[in-house]
Image (cartoon, rainbow over all chains, first blue to last red; front, top):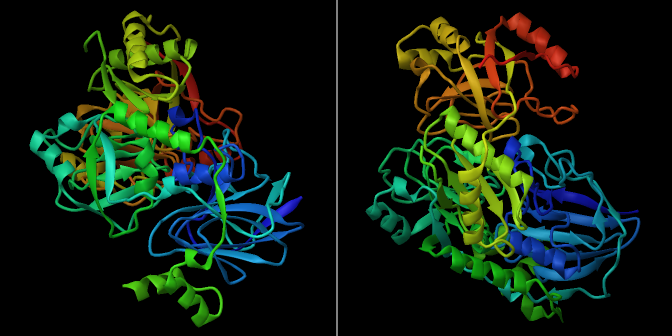
Length: 344
Length: 242
């Protein structure tokens, strides 16, 4: 059996599948990808089930190699910096990783999550019906924890791709995190009309302290009309709760199944990934839409994933100048943060 | 409590079917009855349901199941669903209120102007109803907290509590299992694991069951926790006297 070896991994790099279903009623978190659309695109690029197990890459970055045989891979990590043995790769590409070569993915000036799918099946045992990792409850993935150097992921039915790396063309992933669509409620009646208006009218800043559980927002606090305690009810991914300090918290993939703060609005499914990709400091504005408009957007996303993901040859012009400059300066792998600093 | 529940949207892929806004057995019974009815004949596109104190969250796939179709079906089922027939169980859970387990016992005592011993006595003197799981694996939300212990949740969360914490907050009681940050106050800990993924009976307490806490010393806690860790279930079962 082929093996995908983890040579290095920053914190927050985990195995995810489509998420754990049917156990929310027992308080079991769904987990699953932070950016469902980008995750599904990586699997689609290899013609795999859209919810198949893949590696979710955090801004901590990851370095992998193949052992016991070559592995076909699809990397979809828009905004990240990817290199194969030091040579630049497009952040969305399909490639064959030969034994002895290393693929490195590091944070760039945009994006918070990337996905690495494998042509074959990452062979880890499902827990409660899913391989999705939820580190807080130590469930799923590899021993319920994040991946780290020395981990070896067995790959069943491994396949290889075409020879040279190819750029994946997925324009539906060019999303601006500056505006996020929401459906108001379920507890928008806990806020006076002027506070709803303020919620939608204000620019909020994504706090750097977010993780897979929640995205925290900084800005001018909102006021509650009827207090900040409600009798706990269900929590959907994207629920925007407003605790006592008035600053919205958006509950993401590793959220609790229920919660006790009023939820002023819910981020629509198609914009969850757009939000998840926002780095700390990103400013955003919420736009209210109807359920019907949200379903239309969801249908468009589903449509984008019906056909094969187009591929193109890799060109040197695919890479930002500062990325290439960084590679030349250090003669190999660079820290994407250096590039970001140079731009600034 | 109205006959027809409120239907609230939680985005385009979940509905909240709200039977009330308070913690009452009659409301919980209606939530669980609707949950039973949907489980008996689930529409295509229903993903999963989450019963809570006073509402049922229905996760659905809106590309398969239309929102208004689902809402109409829910209202019809809620108005016609029969009461639950199954008899509840009563569980006796040992609970240690002493140090180091009762981390926030003194804080709650200060809030309500009583001594820590009195807080433990009031807490262990009540009979609780299990309304729902939520928030974390095996985290059981309980009703029936005496009015004297009805302190509000903290305005912002405290650091993660230990496993199997027995807590109060917002007029409610709970048993937690996994260490998590929380807005609740930790009064003690039970050696019982309400969630044991490796045990064939991963969850033994069902929504609608009753729980009483039995105060134990820290030495007894250690003994019972060791038996529980070895795979035993140290909670005792009695038939509820309703």
